[in-house]
Length: 138
Image 1 (cartoon, rainbow, N blue to C red):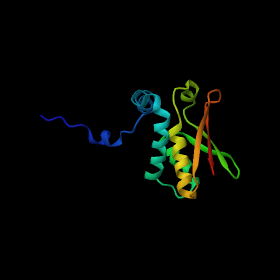
Image 2: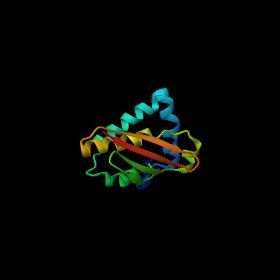
Image 3: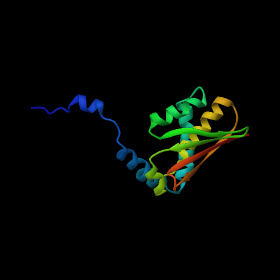
Image 4: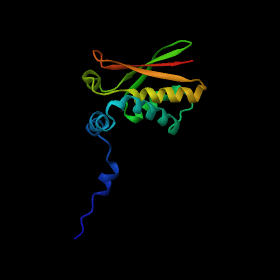
């Protein structure tokens, strides 16, 4: 008698928060070592090329779908936009996760959409459990 996995359960399986945390907080830092932040920033920029948005207003939906958390625009002026990322607040409070992939993704999208060199820096607020993503351009 041949055992077959239950196809319905396999097709419906979705990543869990625990599985994501294992990968993001333990495997990536172990593999990338001291270059984790830089590599994840450029990986985020590469993701922006692979998953292009038509306008920056689409970024919150992408972040939600990717499981990165809720993204809201806090402020903007002529040279920068400040976003607030609300991922799992416990992860931010622990201070073990870097958010440079998310920052790189925003920088890559802005650069592609607006044709301006841009950078984004994450500023985790461990007390509030949020991350400010400050997107600036030339």
